[in-house]
Image 1 (cartoon, rainbow, N blue to C red):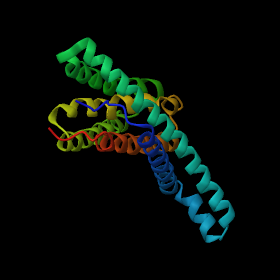
Image 2: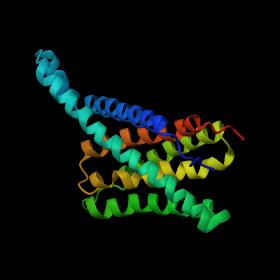
Image 3: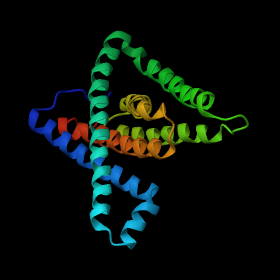
Length: 205
């Protein structure tokens, strides 16, 4: 089971600031990779002021993504508590069903909304598969560090909550924005998930 114990204010601030920093760095890194032509041009021309301005803009956007990630994380801790109280032993099964439902919707509705006639569904499948694979890896690490019961909740968080957090750019379907937001969200979500038990002092069972 995921840890939902309250952390004290000092640890919460530490988690907030470290996740904020990770979000900024991750977004800047993704921005450089996906916009290397622009960044490379600025470097070649030694336009360092403009280079730093663009870099700082990406870091600032990353801070926003980080805050969205943290809001989703703490919201899920609350949802998880209520889910356990309502569904009890069925909560894991409910989460598995929701994971499959969200992945199906992510592929089907995006394809129906944005694909042109004759377009392949493969790119839409690959995006969902990428999120699932990352989620499986993080969930495995989480369960290895804590207990086997953490696997499904961790996978749910990495898939379902990430997609919900990602929704603002899903609506516009711009490739650069899709990955500029998705990758930092996954990084921030994974970091929070894997650091929580260390902050709460939860031992592996």
